[in-house]
Image 1: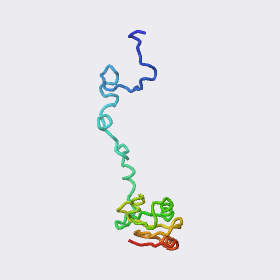
Image 2 (image 1 turned 180 degrees about the horizontal axis):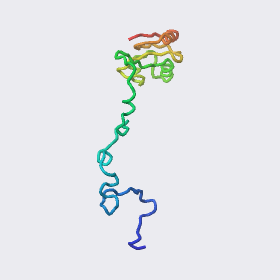
Image 3 (image 1 turned 45 degrees about the vertical axis):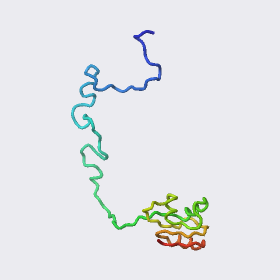
Image 4 (image 1 turned 60 degrees about the vertical axis):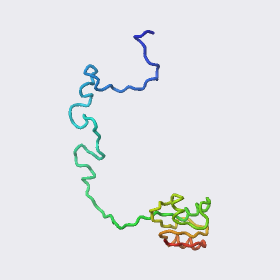
Length: 150
């Protein structure tokens, strides 16, 4: 072993990138393997999402259609089986209101909550929410509880 044949230990180096723009003698100087001119040759270039090389992009070729109602109310649904699960886990006892929904991350404080009728409710609960489906209201009252609309 001498200075002319020193090399790092096997597996200790990982960088096998081409060293670009380090002079003409390297063979990768000048344009640094980017070719001549054009957006891709310049620093700071990043292709926009949906860019198709100047061709009119698909999302602009396809016509707009449909209708969005600006007065639509978006409800956050909470099912009866979810309420029963909260009772079983001891997180709620006799009444459920918006503060309980927010505390258990079923809704945020600005959302409108609607109680839905999936599953069954065995516990007697006083449920306070913005809306109830007919089946949910019937199930809550059948279990001896009360459905209060905010």
